[in-house]
Length: 73
Image (tube, rainbow, N blue to C red):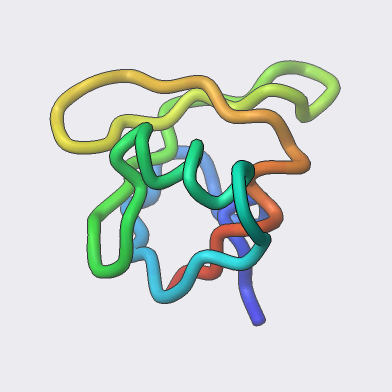
């Protein structure tokens, strides 16, 4: 299983599934990250947390813990 945390900088990936439960999963979905959406990895902070991505035309910062819950292809 490959997660958003494992994606290379400058790549575009497709979300396959969201893991997690309840409020955490709902918050990720509210940010626009849902199944079958394309996510572009813009940059990652020097220590790997957070990472900046582009989703549905806007920039978004994600913590490493949240990125691990997003399965990609």
